[in-house]
Image (cartoon, rainbow, N blue to C red; front, side, top):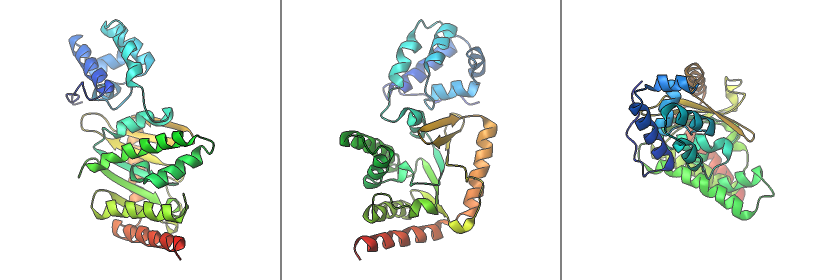
Length: 279
């Protein structure tokens, strides 16, 4: 396994923690695999902690302090690195997303967060919690919009999204919101910033009918896959699981419309929604 990249400790508490973990591990003369074995995780998980793509949990911090002789340093600091503006079940995935070099995602029910507009995000979050105060909804929308700034870079990360036709036809926030949302997705695709394919209803049954998936690749850490359900989420780094889900994504892209035909469908639907709003 290649060693983790040098991290800027000033960039985030988690980057500091990862840099300190690597320093303490190397000082103790342990490889990532050796340290992982002593705290009952894989060597790749240690690499992900050092690279800042995984969050350090309190149980891991306690064991690391014991094994590395660092007093209570990791226990004291893992709580700071865990603070997030995102829901607990999604926070670690959002943080990993920010470090990814490539993201491949299948979205069966809604436009993915990285492709959302403020209006669409507001409608989604209001649906998630109809009784939430308006300021809470706006905080959640701000969090989604912060994620979309990953796409401000002209080339990184690679984002390849397969959107189910149902996600495009489910009217979320009204016709005007949908028209704006689909035009935004189309604009990103036309600029070559993202690859978007639509999985049409006509494709019939497919391998990912049970739910969404997100695959993330990193420069100096093993890939991850993220599964999400209603109020739940889980990151997985098991190589066999990641390979199986990568094959699933490849099958989806084979069944989906080409990027050109997908763009045509998205723009046609955007026009239809605009006509609904202004007949």
